[in-house]
Length: 474
Image (cartoon, rainbow, N blue to C red; front, side):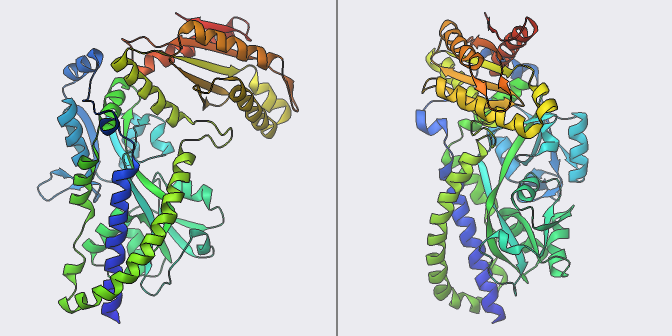
């Protein structure tokens, strides 16, 4: 029975890794395959690369298989492979410095001492000074427990258990928000969580499938197994210093041109680990019977996960309050429009919008009424823009509209229409409100950041000159 459980764990880990690797390879939408075009860097980006000979990176000493340093002090892992690929495609040169712990990494980010930090996406502490790039590698967050623990179909059923999570990880805040009734206990190191389960300090520890499988094998913790898969993914992301927007655009452009084969080769090298080799050969005899059951189970489970993945993808790109695009989604849309504009000589315009005197609403009526106003305002905008226009919440009471194939004059007409609709609408609980609009058309020589700055500047000029106005930035 003891050997049977070991083989069962082995097959579970290998099959989850296989399903996960396939999802990583085929879920992402990449320009390299869809448009069959080579990577094209702008003159400004090429000059930046020549003037910045080395890009500084900080690497975790032991975050395998994502990153770490081997006995020869060489930087290795999935992130290292990704950086090598970016270097080959762009000509960037990376210099990686080892950090002792995640705490030290956070300290580096506060001081903005390096150009790039790798981490899981949606990390509020890093995002203060660093901007996340697009994530092209995802890994499911799984539940690890002792082999005596029964299968757990959903994380909600762990209420009342002691559930360990890695502190300051990108997904820890998402877990706390999604499951407020679960008793989460933060640990600083991966080893602390796994060994804590062995020593019965915790019932379950949550971490990415890749990290769990690698560390369990390295530590020889065969009394542990995967007992369930959560609905969340650990999205491997490169965070770029906000003071270097051109570097951010170069990194994103390269990542959008990654091919499925390139990602598959990286994952195949680091996700697969030798679990079966550690067991006696007699256990292989059980493989045939167990694999039939497990394959049937995972085919069914994979169908459910695909549906959930689609819903989670939409959720990760949507502002929860207003049901419009969130800032990360807007960043991606604008960068794609810039690339299309540079390649096909097309144009697009941005409309930056700010609700006038919004703070007075919160101060007078409270934040719940303020939230209701934001929802009404977003709905009003959505009903009055064109089908091709893309609306998102930029932050706070600011909204942004991306207008494809639209000149400055056409965008100004649309902005004037929206200003009129806002000015003539009675909003529930607050009455009449106005908004200020800034409009800018993309110029082919500029970056996405430059265009955003011009639209934002025009919007603030509209506010400072009396509000309830539309101002265009030539």
